Length: 155
Image 1 (cartoon, rainbow, N blue to C red):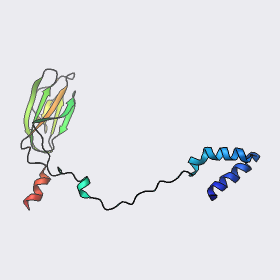
Image 2: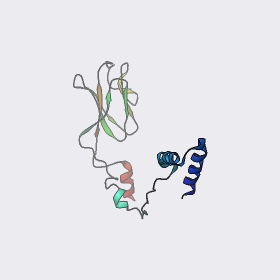
Image 3: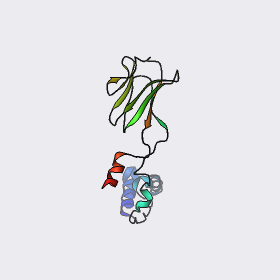
């Protein structure tokens, strides 16, 4: 008998002078919690195959057409990740509120008091607080991919 299990049997028998039949029922109920369940055998893991987990698209990200990157009521903001044209549309009126060329790191924001701004520069007048706005990004060169993809190929 497993020494751990034997210890539980003796404990249960000593507890309130319990009869052996009752002790076994208590142990059967406690077995999963005291570690008597069979442990599954784990298969050995071999070397990882990079072809299984490595994405074939790691170097290229392609956007086709416009991509909606943020939507909501003011205040609304988005930080540009790469050179692009940023457009802000009013979803209620379906009209373009602002359009501008942006570079990586700039922030486009829609506010009720300042309107649409890009890197602090005003692109439109104040906007209504109850309208829903969508910020779109149009990538200038969708086949170029992120800057890191091109750096490795220049060497």
